[in-house]
Image 1 (cartoon, rainbow, N blue to C red):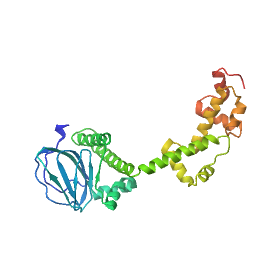
Image 2 (cartoon, rainbow, N blue to C red):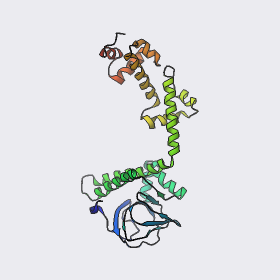
Image 3 (cartoon, helix red, strand yellow):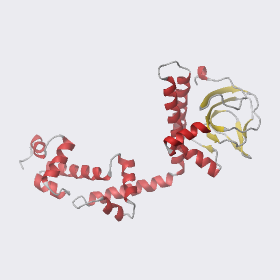
Image 4 (cartoon, rainbow, N blue to C red):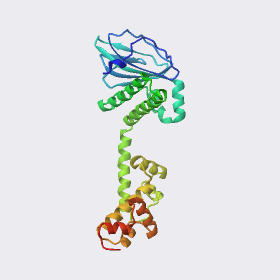
Length: 290
């Protein structure tokens, strides 16, 4: 662990900054902290130690990789069970800064809203996820200790990236079944498209086939492929046409087999996708002329 980035622990429970503060503490037998609450959000990321934490009338045993979020006015304190090494990151963010982030995107608010609604304050992470969190935190601390050009801007970008990542982790932990359902649905739509490439496939038809809102289908495709469903269908048709041409099927047959209504639209799409015309492509691969 990077000893030169550690902060000397104090019992201070108020912020100097108007936006956020981040600390890396690692010590033996630290001073006892009494029951308290803040007027800001506290993210606490546990590295090691024999520690329980009391939050809102309940006690929890901590394990390496745990992330805790304590909202404003929620009482809490750590319970130190032994004099073993106690290491953790503490990240404070003001309500004002959080509200600024919400003005940029509501995605920043998922985790905080979830904690307030469910009264669930602790989230367990696997080692890969926590190592990613730890890497992002050290990047911020290292930048805070530097005098490089663009330091403040870089810190702000890294802090926002960390907060968005923490939101994403919790969202994905809470939507595993939804994710699996979406993956299955996406694959079923893919299969349907491939079976009907020779037919007209407007968005409304695909959506109606699966009793879905057409905007949801667009969202599903964009999330899984990075392109629209219309572009996916065109790419799939072109791929099948290309394979057909390579199999010695004439160009005239190929484009009609896979849903193109006229040669000119097929020609334009093919050249845009592959950089050559269908005839040029056919000649390159020494296939019989169209």
